Amino acid sequence: MLTDYTAARQLLRHGAELLDAGAPAGPGASMAKLFASEAAVRNTGRAVQILGGSGFIRGVEAERLYRDARITTIYEGTSEVQRLILSRALLK
Ligand SMILES: Cc1cc2nc3c(=O)[nH]c(=O)nc-3n(C[C@H](O)[C@H](O)[C@H](O)COP(=O)(O)OP(=O)(O)OC[C@H]3O[C@@H](n4cnc5c(N)ncnc54)[C@H](O)[C@@H]3O)c2cc1C
Image (cartoon, rainbow, N blue to C red; front, side, top):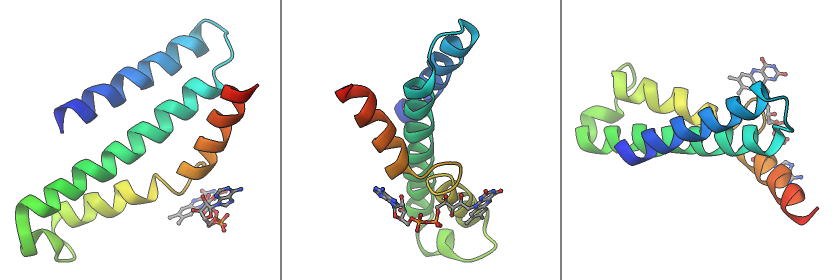
């Protein structure tokens, strides 16, 4: 969980540094958004798993955090759209 968290922060920082430098930041932003949102899903999913059945009950904090994380892979550009952006950048 710590590895996911740290890697997500590093990718976010990388994208922000590209933006600050005025460099093309599309792929950097896509990598940060893709990785951080999927890392959040993995980590909140683990939190639910650790709590067992009680982590799955609506209204429990872990369940709310999992749903809040899950939507980040859908809105503001789905994970599939981020992968399309990255594959186009890679094949250019
Ligand atoms: C809670 C919530 C809040 C939202 N807030 C906003 C908001 O504030 N402003 C706003 O504009 N929108 C908002 N949205 C809409 C959100 O941006 C869209 O749901 C999102 O863009 C996905 O579009 P869609 O739901 O039409 O899915 P679709 O476009 O139908 O996609 C369905 C699935 O197919 C995949 N897919 C689609 N095309 C491709 C492709 N070419 N290659 C590979 N996979 C593909 C997608 O990644 C997805 O997994 C919100 C949605 C939710 C649920």
